[in-house]
Image (cartoon, rainbow, N blue to C red; front, side, top):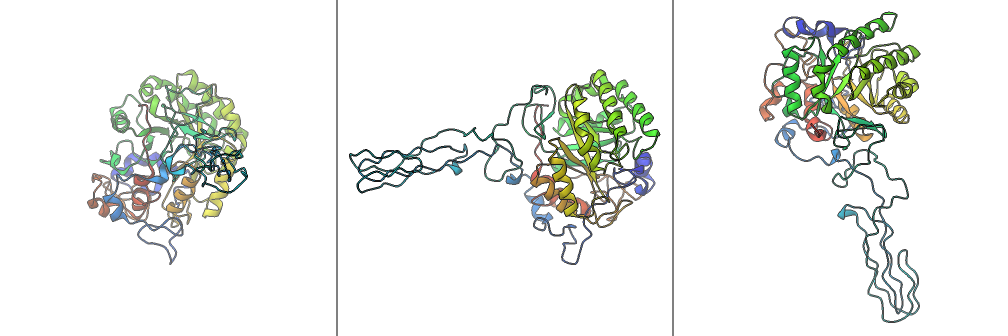
Length: 475
């Protein structure tokens, strides 16, 4: 989040995190439509997916979620109708979906004289009455340029398109066709959380279902405080996203020098981060740079070049400028930044707070960025309800539903952004938990420790972490 980040360590134990709200620069996380009279006060949901039932979610945390299944949308053929008449021969299907439930059926037997041609059946030539057009597997119809088009709910996942020639399949995560892929070549939809404190463990966070965790670094490696947390997440197949916050919301002349200083730190620590490369995204800088600016473009092209030269061969993440909330930086200059990367392996990140007051604005922004063909995610969003320094009434459940429908990943701010002393939080800030030190167990007992925001992010049955998140492979 914003300026708060500088005080995260102190806030964890003593101070209110009001100074380090989410990760949205001067515009801290504040996102969730304020709860109108017709909303569910327990979840902060307005008119998005069905109202979550936290109790039910807890007991079904491991249930398979159809909404999260990915795969090719394959064209379906229609079974050929049988040529009627004496001698109607078997009709052929023109295409077939690999999923059994979508296969076509054969044509019906015809009778009479003269064989009329069916939509897949050949004209009868005389003889005994045809028994009906049988369906034949004509295979996947590739003539229409089949591509992945986001989450599917009509069947299990299947093969993915191969990576582009400039990606590094088998070595790291990578981007292609506007999506993120894990090291095994399977589409990966980040559905996770942020952590404001690298030195706060959030025991049991793995059981929330999060498949990615973005973490504010303030201990330089080789600090065991940092590596212990990342080793733990990595072992649980949670994609780790380390990031640096020193340049948060810097848009003036200090942006270039501070960004360069952050890259100095990354370069110095390159060897230490290498072991996470197959399952990580390196977030170069949090919410840094001006809005709609060639300065943002040029400084990041330079930063990426230095990162690659230092040996960072994996997926890099770049936040938009304007405290992370500027759509124009990515829409207008993202392609140039990607083109400047020798490995063409960058995912962009938009933070959603006060600049996005409602679902209509959100959808417009997401559709605009999708149209660029760039890979991006929502790197931060908060509880809405006009909470925080960059307030919005956009409900988290509505944001998550819009993102899921478009195949865009999301990371909630934050698992541990407490606003009370002694690692405690109330329901008027950005933490998912009231007591950060209480272990999450994946049982009904957790409900009393989840904030309103936490209940939505973790337990919402159609958009929550447990319902949607699937772990990346290859590490």
